[in-house]
Image (cartoon, rainbow, N blue to C red):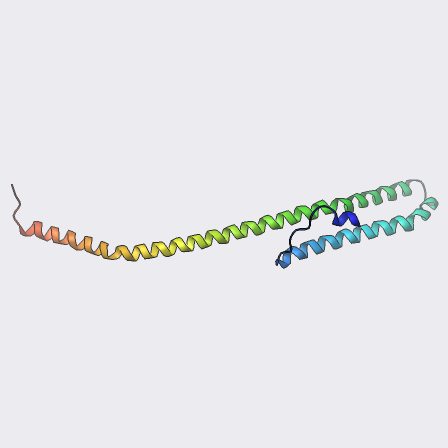
Length: 140
């Protein structure tokens, strides 16, 4: 089964257990399917001659279809790996955005606390201006 391991350089191992589980599951499915196709081919080759005419053709088409399915699985495995890598990259992006938003929130909290005395001073200044306007005669 050299074709299974030959699609390209193997990606660096990741600490994600789900990634390894998906790959192991798909690999086990492909290996099992190939084994069933090979066993059916070996067992059925001698017996096909004793069966009525339409049966051997049907069995041969079924075995050919199963072999094609098994041969198509490695590209699906590669696509699933790419999908898992994309999902992981998106999660990392979201984590980075969360960290940036957290830092921005901390900065805004500091700014809000820093502006509180200015806001209080502004309110006091407006009260003083109103008091002075009420206490002093208006200029004409």
